Image (cartoon, rainbow, N blue to C red; front, side, top):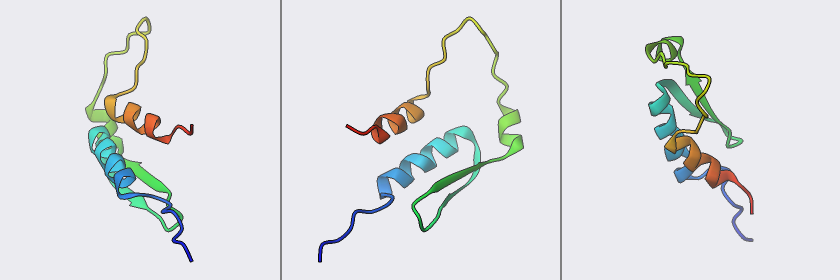
Length: 74
């Protein structure tokens, strides 16, 4: 009987932890269904007060771009 594919891989968890650290998250939780939850704290969000420029085009961070590229299906 062949092994079933993993719901979440070690690489997925490593990417989530790196992105969570970059965002100042309080914790990262992986449940038995393979869902990765990142809990942000209100203090982490308030420590970064970005200057808002509405004329600027938004681009994702490197970590988010890597995560989005890794989840696209062919």
